[in-house]
Image 1 (cartoon, helix red, strand yellow):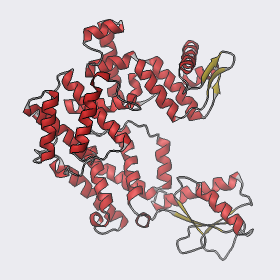
Image 2 (cartoon, rainbow, N blue to C red; image 1 turned 180 degrees about the vertical axis):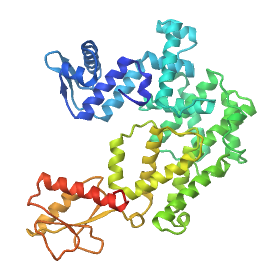
Image 3 (cartoon, one colour; image 1 turned 180 degrees about the horizontal axis):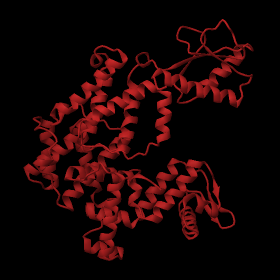
Image 4 (spheres, rainbow, N blue to C red; image 1 turned 30 degrees about the vertical axis):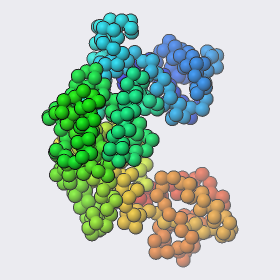
Length: 479
């Protein structure tokens, strides 16, 4: 079953996504109805209808190459991640569930009465669908409480961006107003967003705009995440929102503070200062404890001064995890985490410690799924910003075969392609050498040796991979 925000789709839409993801994950191009029914545990009727729908979608959209014949089964050609993303957006545009969700949350589609008439559904159908969607959301994302307007707006941004982020928000009547707001804020706060960041920022603004205009949901003092800023950039933002959204000065103040907190959380502007956060003491405490953990485990002195960029990015990530904006709508499989732990044990050990430190802060609490995603973010940060000389968890390999340098170079290139193995290929034996590979066994070589055929067999490669796992485990005392 499709995970994440796909829970907002109805069962039929989810099934279409499941089928395409099955093709992608199993790298296939064709499947019989009988096997599809068995693999996805669905009825023959469901399989038949879904296959016909995918074929019809392909007939009307040239970016898909789907076909279906009962005798030949379902054929999906060139299925990639992009295929899944494009199908998601297409289904969302026509999904009654999504339309109900957007009408209830953002007032899109007019008043409730006019929406029901245009959609041709009863009020009971509307509320039944709404109730199920919110129940499924809470089941899928237990740490998204939606207890206040800030949390609700943040979740709405993630949901709308997930379904429609490939293109402009489907809001023609207010597109110019959003465009003007975006340009003002970028200029005023000296933002330099990437294309993806600019698109996310525009969705953030759309949610604010529609919640104010259509739902009359305006932030108050209880929603403030910052202490009062005292600069001209904030004052100009407040005046702009007051003038263009018809807000009182006090209302504009709280809305401007919300935007200010957003760009601070993602470290988007050189003009914003982290100490304005009301939770700055908690952020600093978590970051300091994590830096202390690095100093203890890696025997590094003054980590904050020695690795300033790492410290800055760690603080930024912790700021996100302690804000209502923190949300990860990805599904990192347990197998991917296991591979990471096998290849980068020191990094993963540090990331685990970081997680334990973060968990000691109660709010916002993080579900097991979110903790897994945060674990991965910590590992990526450590891997990217701490030097290899400090981590010292790479396996040094020397390949030296009796057939000569050309063959050695060939093997070295093959070894480099062992992605995710965290290895270094050296040309000569040194004190750092962990493993020596050759077609002969040399008693004079004191380091660990494995002897391969020329060329190596599948069994040789399998032995090497198992040995690398063993090496990494020993580095981090996993055995």
